[in-house]
Image (tube, rainbow, N blue to C red; front, side, top):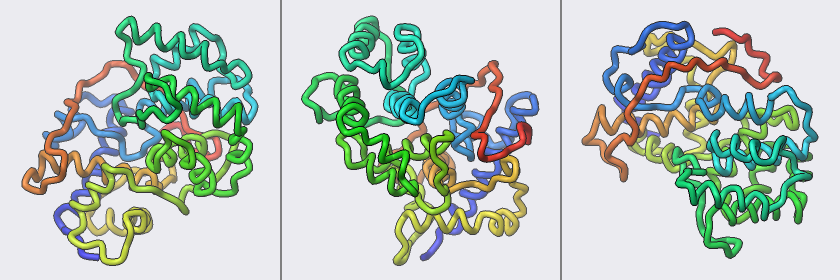
Length: 315
């Protein structure tokens, strides 16, 4: 492989500086937390995926909310939440239905609630990433197709039983991606989120999938990948992170004792692609602008992590 050295070094700089911002915010330091004007002005995901707002909501409200759920209920709750990926949609369903469990799932009831929200001008999907929206199950409405998908997975096929018994993340990934409306990227996100729970305990360091944004970042970072796949490139970054931070004199602050995982290294490539749109605009991809400006929020997030990670609550 042949690196584009400037961009390759920017990858590690971005990972470190974005994590520094997270730590400073956590410690209550005042805005702007960085001297980098791009990081000051635009919105970027955290270096650790688990620290992003939606992942924290998933952990606190869907997975570890103080209640005990069956394994089937837990997987249902996670996949339902992630198909819409929007906190307000989850809260709307809870408000109308009470505690969300598989045995109470009825397609018609859910559809009516969501249709009413849409008719009142409420967005029910997060636009952070666009979930597949074809009419795979024959419905005109996107949400009706997603509800039919849930019914197929859980009520018809009982595929959650196969997911629970899967020995690896890749095995579970292949189960999910066999369904309509679930592509490679979505399947990888879903198995990552399921692995946050206590239902399964798959290795995080043996499997990854490069999403579209990550692929753009890899193209900017490497002039030539040689015979390496995008996934092998991501694994290379995962395996060499400590030596690269050291080489560049970057004091990367780990999340507890947890290094960046494959999912994090994959995400950082996506954020690097965004960062380079402003930093090095001549290095073009099919995206030329960063969509979202950064707006400081006053609310403080109380961060939690999967219990099996055994991370100290503070960094």
